[in-house]
Length: 175
Image 1 (spheres, helix red, strand yellow):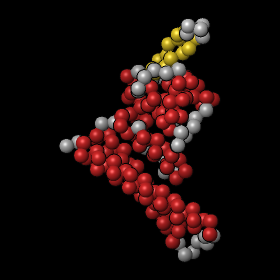
Image 2 (image 1 turned 90 degrees about the vertical axis):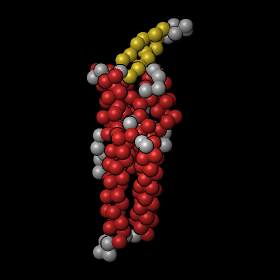
Image 3 (image 1 turned 45 degrees about the vertical axis):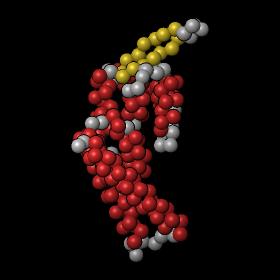
Image 4 (image 1 turned 90 degrees about the horizontal axis):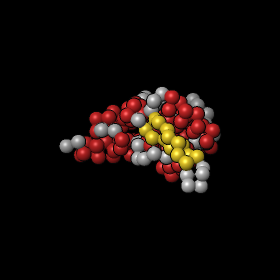
């Protein structure tokens, strides 16, 4: 997911690695916080695959800075990463869905429709599984598990409601 975040922030303008880190933090800190240890190899991978380029620049103080910018292939890769199927593993799904939905403005209306349908379909599936666990009379659940399952249902219901709002907005914008 870090590659998606890097490419997304570079759509606005070029940044140094520090600037990329700060921009990701300012936009996505509620969902993720990648370390420099994860960012540096991601930048190398993206550059070696031709998805971004770098240029070195000397500051007035004599410090060497490396600036990264996205390439045309990088824009295509960003689109591919946003539209790539999400994991059905609930612990990965919710965070990655939020990250991808946060980047939906980069997509055209048809691509947004595809993303929204995919997220909503998986969210409904996970929500239904959670409801089944909660209502299964044969499964023993203690107080804490019930509270957390109830919270999970609310979280998925809210995500589905948000996506349905996005779908309505998308429909309005495509007319």
